[in-house]
Image (cartoon, rainbow, N blue to C red; front, side):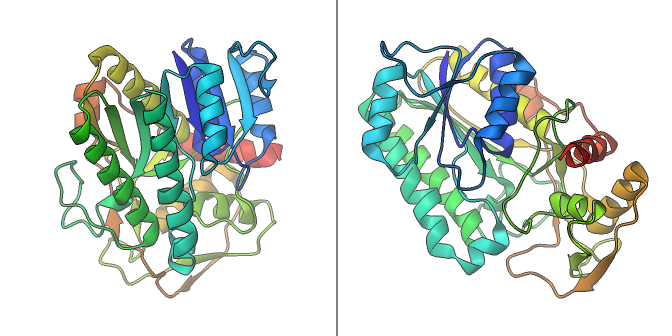
Length: 346
C-alpha cells in the first residue's frame, strides 16, 4: 500500500514509518517541521536501510520512502501529493499535542488540529482516498468515572487538545455516516514514551518539554535543573497523577495493525480502539524507575496542579487485542532503558 503519513517526521510518526517500511508498505511523509526535523526521517532511512527521497521526482513514480515539506492546511499542496503519488490510505498524526499549551493557546490547537484536519479530509474525499487511521487520544474520555477505561465510556474533554481530538472523531464518524465507503480507525492511545532500540530516533521536543518522560530525561543529563511535579494531592496511592505509559514502538505497531485491519475488511468500516498497556504508573513511580535504570538522581519539587489534568487514566486494551491481535510487548523498564539510550546519544 502507498501510505501517506502526516506528521511523519514527529515522534510517533517516525517510529510508525519504521514499522510500515519494515512490513513492505510504501511511505510518503508530509510534515511542516513545527516540532520535528528531517533528521528523524534520515535516521528512519538508516534503521530500515531504505533510501529517503526528498521531493517528487520527474515522472512522479513513488520510491519506497519519500518526504515532502507540506503543511496540511495547504489544500493545493495536498491535492498535488494525492495526485502525484496515487495514495491508497492515510495515517494522520499531524497536529499540536501538549495539554498545558492547549489551555494557554486554544486557537492554535483548533487551527492546527481541527481546521488543518478538515482540509486534509476534503483533499482525501476529492481524490477518492477514503481509508484513514487517525491519531486520537485518551483525552477524549475527559475525567473518566472509572479505570481501566473502555472504548464504550462516555466522551468529553477537559482541555482544548482533547476537544480537538474529540472534534476529529466526530467529523470522521460523520463522514462515514454520509458515505459508507469510508474506512476509519480511531486509535485512542495513552502516554507514549521510549525510543527505538537503535537509539537513532526518539522524542525531541522543541524548547522545554511538556510531557513527563522527556522532562525527566533532560533533567538526568543536566539540561534542566529540576522536575516540577504538578500536584501531590490527587486521590491516588502517592498523591501524584497516574497514567498509562506505552512504548512508542508498541504504539507504532498498533497503527500498522489497524491499517492492515482496514485493508483486510474492505470498504466501509469504523474501528475505535484503545492502545495502552492496561497499567497505570504515578509520576513518582516513573521518577523512581528512571533513576533505577539510569543510576542518576532526578531532583524534583512539588508544585500546584496543572490546569486540565486529571488524577488517573489508564486503558483497558482488551478490544485491540481481540480485534487487531495487537498487544504490548515492552515493559516500563524497557521504556526507560530505551529513553536513556536515546537521550545519551544526543
